[in-house]
Length: 274
Image (cartoon, rainbow, N blue to C red; front, side, top):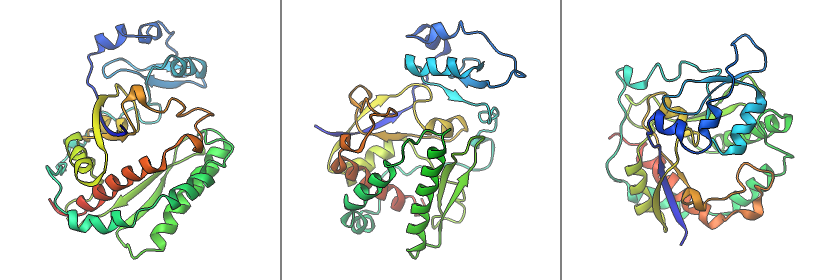
């Protein structure tokens, strides 16, 4: 049975991390001086010291299946936790706006998903250091801007977040009715489960993804509570992801539609004051 997965970060002691799987071998990698060129500062454990590595060593981490975070450009990310400020996260305990969400879900279709992904996958590669990777993100942000421009939404903005390479990240901000809620809100696993229960036609399973397993890890490192959804349990997920064989013919648009339902509920529920 197809399921929606609600995954959460596992907090594992450093002593466990360095002894498990292939990670112990990488603790033996030489440590580079900061002044040496073409090095990146890599961390692959919650409490494991970061190391300066060459690209070849980083590629070996990929091949061994070791999850890691490149903190070269944001070494202080974990130092200025969101909770050091007066801001506190607003995490709903249940869904409350089913009637408002229903029309949005009723208008969902796989037609636009298919046309957009056909265009997106036509880029030769989306590798972040390639010129095609830069072109693909420019195409993607333009699609988001077009949606905003063609709507009546005056509370949605989208911006580029630059990196040292050409491909930038895309940051979309949805301002809710709560004027005191000026930051993006990331929410915990239990609320995502509630969204699946109420808005999707499939169920969920829970799993642990380990250190730095996906994009939400950066939010967590900055001190925000975070969670994310993926198509299945990790052991059953698409093994072609992030490879040259990650092509459109291996996707289920009906399954993606269920994620869109959850995303619609997410946006509407968090647009209200809690």
